[in-house]
Length: 89
Image: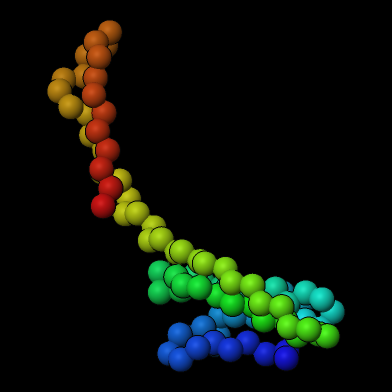
């Protein structure tokens, strides 16, 4: 139908566009810009030509981890072993 149904309160209105300018030319792919964790969900593509075809895609957006904190445990001496630790929340 040449339109995107964004759902209620999704915040997608300014971030979703068709990949091709005319989706009636057999490509109804969409582009999700500036992904956010809240975009996680099930997306449904409904294409109607002579018949109706529906396909669902589950999208999971994970948070970017914080910058890691790294350090060496114990004394660093040439020729000896050292333990390097890193942690990220």
